[in-house]
Length: 383
Image (tube, rainbow, N blue to C red):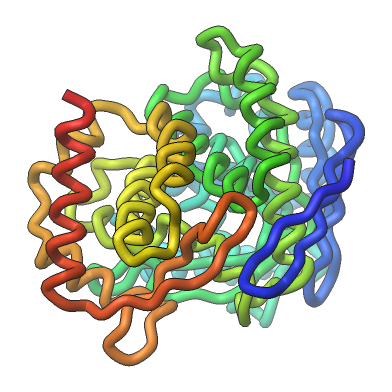
């Protein structure tokens, strides 16, 4: 199936896999890599093969929660280095601890790091392996919906710094990505909603065809949000892959994938990350849509269509935290966003379904008032 969507003036062609088991090839610098969809049994075989390859240097860098769930039945006693995968630990100090492990084991470019966890585990692994000896091979096994459907491709690695979200970063692709959807059954509901936040973002970027396909897949779920999840993950990755094939290093059109992130990243640290990342992005999309409508960039009826897509993946608990926000603090954090130039804030927004661009707004009292109104509308709309 072929389709296209528009970012700025660039027409982006979308290719979707024909089958649920099809691997996805990601074109990247300095090497291409594949995303493989495999069963739990096959994942165990892959991990055993990597252990045999690494020999005495083998270890798995793994989220401590994931380690407790899968050590016995999947890892077969393989040595592990644990990370407490929380936003407060996504920093240089944690990344350097992994570098210390690599140095102590005398890891070389012959060996392969196995990283197993969600986006935080991925960020730290990707950063550490990139700076150690100018690059060590690694294989990524994502264990959250968000990491399977979004962050596992695109090569971005970001660390938090001095209270700022994702202030340090580089590009660091894995050699392979191994996706096993059976791992998702252990996730808490809010983590699943978080994954859907990034999925819906990418579905919206992809335009009318991807929205219709997403709605078709969701219509078969009947309350089980993990039913039919592989084609949903593939749909999300197909949109992202179409963008990063053109602009891997975010020189231009990839900035559209920051839709919802300017506001989302601003509120996350202010609430001590009590709102999971993807849910914060869903909130950010709704807020940024309201701003776009006021500035005349997005039609009100199209904003309403997008709201119906986004809102089911925001939980009441997350909305309740918004009451604690001070819009002055939100605006100050938005000013730190990496897309900004000078005193203007740049928002990646839909100008219409299937057409994205950048909206630059002054960080002034008008924007502060719009933020306050948008948060109030969200709080009021979920009572």
